[in-house]
Image (cartoon, rainbow, N blue to C red):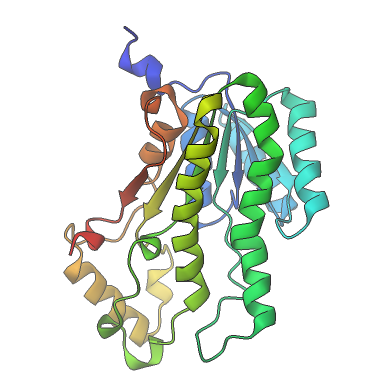
Length: 267
């Protein structure tokens, strides 16, 4: 029987985190590094990823920054190849990136914006998973973690939003629901290779709350009031779920969703 600390240890593992310099992404990367993994930080802003990797390396962690455009097949193939060339393996993939530039309300939707959003936020996740799966299948092990949202379990509770904020993005909720289906499909398909596929459904996290508009502040107050834990998510809150799903501590967990929303979706 292994010691529980060893079960959570990611030493020697190689992880890719998309959107690794974003809101939750930076915390995901740091958590995996702290658990001992070598982390590839990937996003369209390769320079920012490289800067963050340098900061982490200065702290004694193992990280590199690479460019990735999830709307480009060539970019996806190039990233997977570069990671294999550098490390010779891919153990963990965290599909975290979100392109928010084409998120639209129903009234503002166009076919072009919907397709552009889906190209990155869902199709890109599938195609990047496709690119790393051959290496995981060969190793007969691997962990793919899809970062969904509580919006993939419910929908915006519109009565809580001030009138000016009620035109929420229909494609964000739709895409996050789709990621839950993707998680279960891939878990069922690739379990025979020892590959586990799970998702995390985080709640709200916004470090820029102090800069919010009056309507935004009103919504934040309402959110906190009605959240069972009466709090907004913090920077450390996603680290534990990610490390758990990436590590041998969750060796018998697949097709599951870890809900990390302060209890919001229990109502």
